[in-house]
Image (cartoon, rainbow, N blue to C red; front, side, top):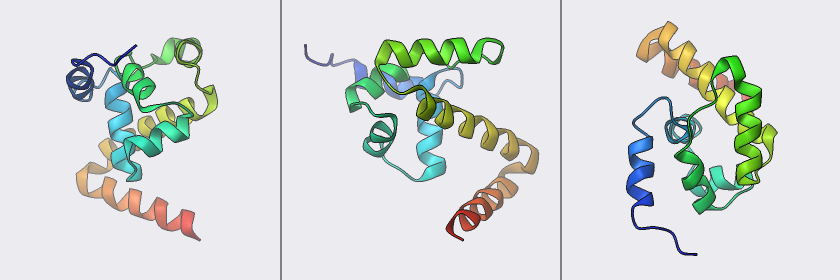
Amino acid sequence: MSTPAWLGRAVRRSQEESWMLGYAFARYRELEGCSETALAAELGCTLETLQWMSLCRRPKEEAFSEHASAIAERFSVELLPLVQVLRRVEVLDSLSERCGADGGNALQMAARDDELH
């Protein structure tokens, strides 16, 4: 089965909607400075699977575990790496909102510096 021509456009559109996984994946790649290929490898899936997952809704907090598990099962990806990606985006977005745009960048640099030591 071949990838539909419209999938790439749909994924780009999903990156603009904060309630979609495409947004979370794009945000994660931005925060971590990684490529789609690297994110797919981290999640243990193909680029095509990553694209299809991007079209899903992000798990809602009140049923996060249930929704994340359903996504992981549907796309045959490991649950833990998926949850780690989603939670990292949530935490850093929340901190960025509290710190403002410049504070968020400083916070990210400090976190990365801490990881190196």
